[in-house]
Image (tube, rainbow, N blue to C red):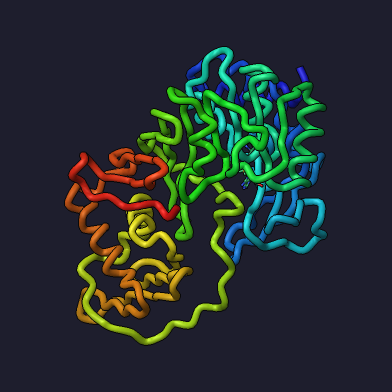
Length: 380
Ligand SMILES: C[S@@+](CC[C@H](N)C(=O)[O-])C[C@H]1O[C@@H](n2cnc3c(N)ncnc32)[C@H](O)[C@@H]1O
């Protein structure tokens, strides 16, 4: 047994023992696919740096292979252009734009997708090709199509898949448009997140099929949704337990904005504790309520800046207790967020798995609880 085989089998044992790997077919795939063929060199975040600095762990460095077989996401590109081999001794900074997602999440999602023999699967976000290889191993090359936006990333993944002995169908392009050749699929799995479900997916996944995708947004909150396609162009779904996040699909990313200037506005007392926006589901509820806003700050000092209208809201703690909110612009962002957070609090502050989502050409809506519960439209 090589060191790689030993480390891989230890990771499979760990993921089996902690309850991630429950399906023997996916355990077999995880045992067979050598992650190191897909990852090569990778970035590692340097603790305590703000903004986060990254150093490179080069292919073959001491600890490189152990890192590959640790259950962690390995960042392989920053800012849509910089790879680990492109930097020298100085740390790099920037937003991760491609990675090999942590094995527990990839394998967990393949299992949640609930595939069966013969299913045709469309994957969005090939990345390094590791998850594509797992899919090809389990379902067969001919049943997996994967789309990657970034041509350089796609080229590397194609070589790695070939080196590992897999030949799924690979497409370079914008996966939000679905298969450009108009294929039909039983399952769609996305390893990048979206602000709303692209209509092309709803047309290409046949009724009875499923879509597994993380819904995210410009305030960096996210939730993993499993949708059942009920008719051409229509789906209903629910959000799954856990804390899943993925980098946002490049065409859905927030447009660049100039440096933020905080301006005066209308002041009033806030009815909610702004720190609720720092919680996993609270931040997501706020994002649903103000979907074109970016959120900054923390605790009592939150800042919302609306990308579409320039509206702003910011909170500050009052010396005698409570918080003041200052709002300006055509949208009253804090009013929107406060109403949503209060509705969520009235329901007992449940996790996203208490919410559902309906999607059709008429619109996309997330709802809490039953049909009479509060709801929010996704920004299509
Ligand atoms: C988290 S990585 C994918 C991880 C991958 N599944 C793996 O196991 O290595 C997300 C990938 O989605 C790609 N991506 C972003 N937007 C996309 C889009 N609109 N269509 C297809 N791929 C996209 C990114 O370039 C990036 O490589």
